[in-house]
Image (tube, rainbow, N blue to C red; front, side, top):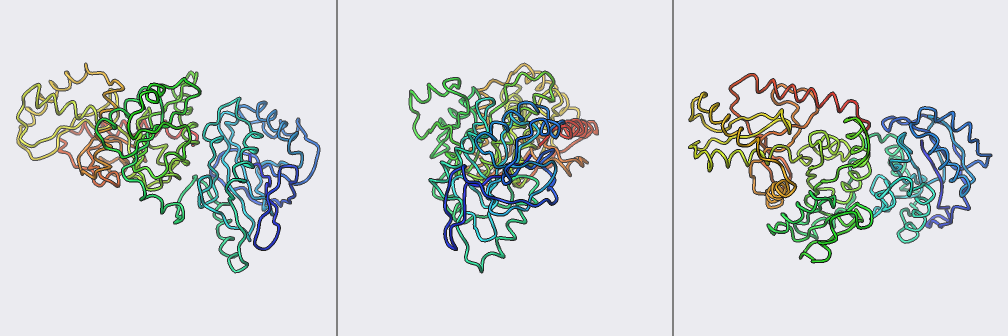
Length: 496
């Protein structure tokens, strides 16, 4: 469902005059709705008409939470009575700069919001707006039903845009270029892509070695402490998205770690070199698919905003299930695949190498062992490097090492240490090999877009190279292909 309204009225050839929601002049024409966002309804302000509750209820018949959406839109009508709605239409609007896309998971997922400037207006890129006109506000980022409502969102937009103007008037010679931008917005289907604003991106180099951790739970705290202890970041931001004192960040605030900032504002992450996702949805869903979808819904609000604030960063995913959430982040961010990686089997690989060298005292003469594939029971062990051991010796050594590895659990602090090691390789461009979740399409005859752990060289741009391993058994490739098939099947059921 799209909602359109105006908090602006053109006042002259060079200015835009702000006004409140009580004045909402607009007009609308029907056209073709762009695809890609899922089921929805366009709702545009303009013609004053009686609010048809039952008619809207019928239009939203396929919405999962229809009654909640109808009640909220009824409340919108009380505050903003000049609107109209229609199903599956796209409005070629005039003088209606702000557009909402209300998803079929509303009100539990926030709307997606864009500026829709007229042909003689230009977007002013800044803290709350990107080059394509997508709007980023704390109210959207902290959306939580039933506390968050569209009326509240509109009020915050009015307040924030009074502080920082999102639009300015163009000279007539620039109108043709603006028409191209309007066409782009009309066709956008996969969130923010191709952001290229020099005025915003030029700030990127002002902060050296800045890292952001998203999530104030045990894993987020562990990552923050490990990164701080290693002295990797000149500035470390921990985004605590929990309400009140529910998060575990209070003690960090009390004891005030150097160079660590705790914030609830996503814009505090701006210009990070690495953004680490540790958040997981704690919903009460019954099925595994529902749990994963809850994470996806949360990421739909987080990833585009964080990608906007740190457009040249590497996104490191520690949220679970890591292979699927890395894929989701890749799709939502529109980042190149080399800059979106999951923690994968890095911890298991580092542990296994330690066990073989320091516990079993085996002489591998330069050969390295890796845990690859999918986290959990379906992970696979493989070797890289020159052939110095017989295949039988490799198998025997691998089996003994795996027996010792299986008794080791993955505590938050141990995962945090592993994450810090990967961040060190990225930020300091160490070109060190880690077994991380990367796009596996094209490797081991995998033909689907899935992320699996493979040995990768990590540097400032993320994955610079995938290391070839010496696979001796067809069963290893078969296991990887089986994991890829299973993951791909679940991905197809998700609503991005």
